[in-house]
Length: 337
View 1 (cartoon, one colour):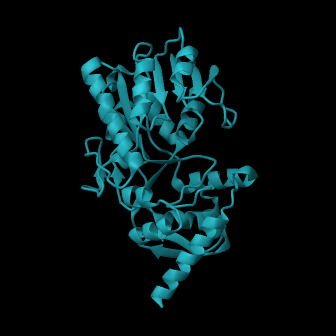
View 2 (cartoon, rainbow, N blue to C red; view 1 turned 45 degrees about the vertical axis):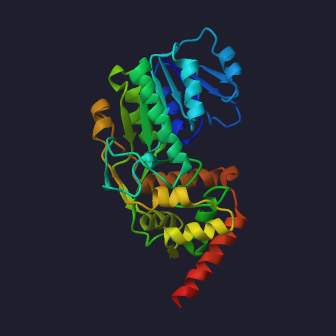
View 3 (tube, helix red, strand yellow; view 1 turned 90 degrees about the vertical axis):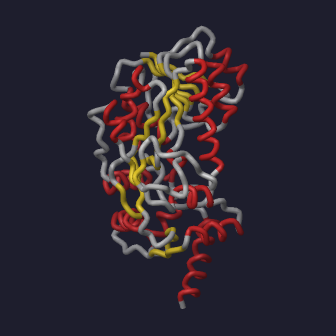
C-alpha cells in the first residue's frame, strides 16, 4: 500500500506514522522538513511548500498513491488545491477535520458523527466545516474518494494538554502547577473533556486506510475516557507531589480578559473546551473492531511530562502568559473577598 502524508510530523500524525513502521506499507511524507521527526522512518520525504501548487505538481509528477492524508489542510483553498493535485492519482483522500466543528452550543452531550456541525465562535472550526461540505460535494458530483476524520483533543510526547495557554505553549501551565501557583481553570472546573493519546488515535485510524467501505464516510476517533479539567490538572499536580491551586474563572470572562492583552481564547474556550461532551465511538469500532484507547490519561500525562523533563528543548517558558495568570488570579481573589 502506497500512502502519502501531507504533513506527517505533527501530534496527530506522529502516532500513525509510528504504527505504520510496523507494516509493509510504502509511506511518503510531503512537508517542508522543518520539524523534528523524532526517529520516525518512512520510505521517502518530499520537501516542498504545501501552498506552492506549481512546485507540488512537479514533485508529484508520475506518482500514484492508494491513500493521501492531509493533516495540514485548514481552508477551502487548501482542499481545492488538494482536489486538483490528487483527484487522478489516489484511490482515497482522507481529510483531517476537527471535533470542534460539532454544534456549539452543545445540543446533546453525546456526540455521534451525525451530530450537526455549527460553531460560530471559532474561525478554525468554521473553515473545517466549509472544507467538509465542499469535499462531500465533490464526492457526490465527481466521485472524489474522500473520507473525513474528526479528531478531538489529541496529545503526544512533546506538549502537555491544558485548557488554555499562551502563545509559546503549555509548559508554563505545568510549571505553575509544580510551583503551587494559582492555575486558571475555565468555569468551575467540572466540564468533561476527552483527551486522546496519539498512539491510541492511530490504532483507530489505521483501519480507515485503503478501505473502500470508508469512502464518503466521516469518523471521529477519541478515547472513551471523559474527565473534568480539575481532575486533569490534579493528575499533573500528583505527578509532582504537590497540591493543585485552582483559580476558577468563567469562560466568557477569560475570553474578555485575554482579548485585552492580545490573547484570542474565544474559539478554544467558548467554541470548544467549555462544553461537556462524550464521544460515541461506535462507528470507528465497526471499521476497526480491535480499536480501544488503552492509554489511560494518568499514564499518558505522566509519560508526556517525563519525556519533556528529559528533553529540555520542549520546556518553553512564557513570562507573558505567566504574568497574565498572576493578574487574573489576583483579580478573582479580590472579587471573592
